[in-house]
Amino acid sequence: MGRVLASVGIFIDKSKKEDVLARLYQIENVEEIYEVAGEFDIFSIVSASCLEELRETLQKKIMKIKGIQSAVTNIILQPYMVVKKLDASKRL
Image 1 (cartoon, helix red, strand yellow):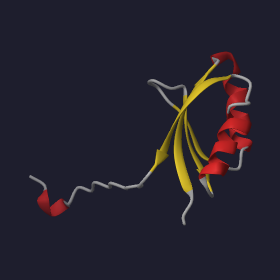
Image 2: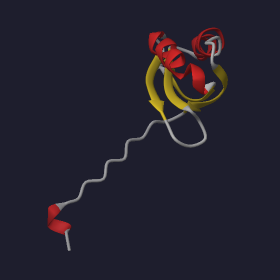
Image 3: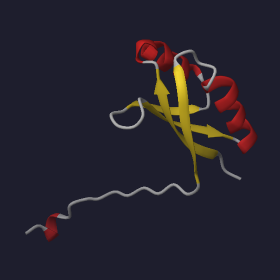
Image 4: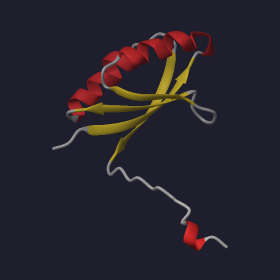
């Protein structure tokens, strides 16, 4: 079985942003970290070998970081990549 992937939208205390980002960077299971505009302050992609490891990472590592107020996690069921390329032969 492949790795379990999850998207994690994180709400933070803005005064602790740099500390939160530094701590997230140190967590091995955190694959990607983005500062975003929108509902969340930070958006990350987290991977794990199983759901139990994902739960441990979320509860015992990510949510223990001072400055993280809350998070919304979504398990990624099927990743898709959509790449749109402009075919020069189809230009108007």
